[in-house]
Length: 530
Image (cartoon, rainbow, N blue to C red; front, side, top):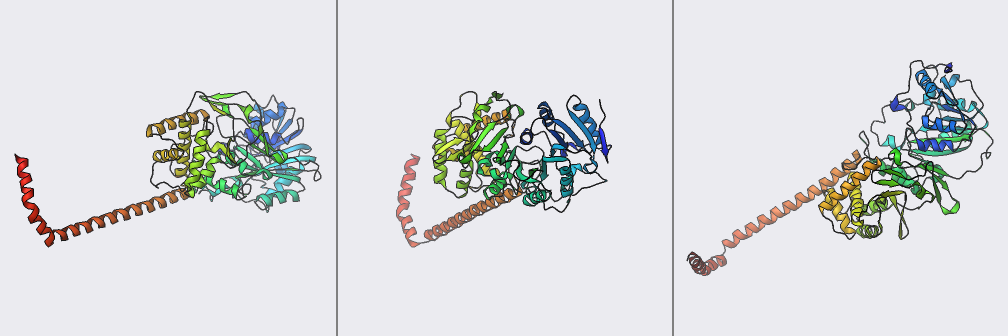
């Protein structure tokens, strides 16, 4: 086996920390493969994802790896000894190779630096560009220092990683970085937003594609409470950012793809997106979305299309192929209606849903409203065995109740209501009557499905962030004050009635009445004793 090529300034006893290294991401890898023609010569700088490397080499692509840590480089050399992979170790500043068709810095530029040379962001991209042949492609991933993940993380003010440290003069905004790339003579630059971050993105959406059509797959990236304290519920924050037209600007990270040839040489490619819900590997299906002219979006499942099974949950990738049902999510409309205390809309939509739902995959966050119709956003999910529409509706209302509570959303019901009682009230608005036992049955079904899908079971309804906690405390405080005011009013009313009774007993009318009714009362008591 050939030795690792040492290019200079290699870090001899260094391996990227596992928590800091991008994880295996089928979604990101697919987005990258779409910019590579099989057989091209590719440089992967600072990123060594095994799935991507093996898929590229199997298509006839020769891959060069540049890793700053010698420990990582030696491990990669051993792992890919049987593949068309050349491993280099050292800094980007000292890297002598050039003439690549594609250069990929999918872990960011910070991990291309060494203690001897810390390149600014523009200088790092310029160095990457020098390794590309004329007409080649450069793809760079950049963490957003003001992304929704940083906004919602109270620890984000503490610098902990290489990417946290300021480097270079390029403005760290999506527009500023794109302008900097053009200044470095990269043309036809395309910008993609990565969610939920650099490490394992489950949704990659191009700027031209960012719309509420993808709100469901983007917000599903945060399917549970974060492992650290949060300032606010990320799903709410992302949803509002997309609605405000800031979905790309506030994305946790960006992928820039540019070319070294003349402008327009790469052709006008349609807008693209790649996504899948974060589920167990055995159920994962990467999907590519492409703008389909004036007809909307076309979706194509990638990879193996055979049916997939986990427990009682089944997924049929073939059902994903075709036009995408566009429209607002039913859950979003219901959250807005609850916030406005619009019971008419809640009742209308839940009643329509209860009559329409036939499968467990039709959860409120997987249903879009298109005019007067309800359509599935992702129609690939099925559940083995028969389940009644009443149970499915109860499960959907249970999930909505948990979302209302954990997100501290305003709703028309009492602030201190339990999730069980809130679920029963929601089901009642749909025209059905259920008991607490029915709610528990629906909760068991939801937990079973979540376990099969490999996603966290949403049992806790504690507020997801400090903002939601404060809103919940405020709402409960108001409810407590109202209850205390009612109790005080009732106490005052009882005291007033007592005073009136005392005044009545001292009145002449009362005394006369006692004289008149006294003998009659004595006669009744005597008869009872007989």
